Length: 256
Image (tube, rainbow, N blue to C red; front, side, top):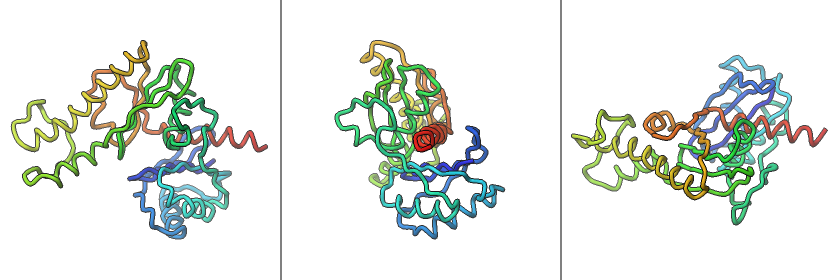
């Protein structure tokens, strides 16, 4: 069994993976100022509460888009598991043809590894989290690039904080696109507006590629939006954990 950790701007996703099967997953809030000992305590507690024997880990891997936490997290994983964690870096075997491959976030690399293992390209990978991202892999398996938009929660927080009359809302789909009150109108924009944006971007991507794409989505906010998209979109909440497992196996094989 290995410990796989994906650090996002909002949440840290923890997965315990045994022979490719995810036996446990959970989330912690990302706090980059915490020490290695504080992170270790949180990791140990969440694993123990869910019946995971930390002595059973044979290795660990993590990806992170929050560089200030990386050193403390690596140390915390060593404290909890007794293992040195492999940190995702570089292209991890992908053919990346963006202007500067070093700019590509580790989460996007991990997601691409996962979808290419399971689906035939061309592929559009949608991630609805702190940011909304749509990235494209062409029919030859090359990572072309994509689009980054403000995430749904960030957009709603900005809307409420920068306007005097618009409240904070709990995200949910209203009964009608045409909202008859302020909250419904804001929810219409958040839910139907983002669904329409994703559909519109996928239309433009397919036009630019000259072919249909298989679209895979992940991210914590996907459950609010995907049901309202008109494109067929496959949702996989564990996509990044699967990618981390694949990268760990490749890394282990290279170092045996």
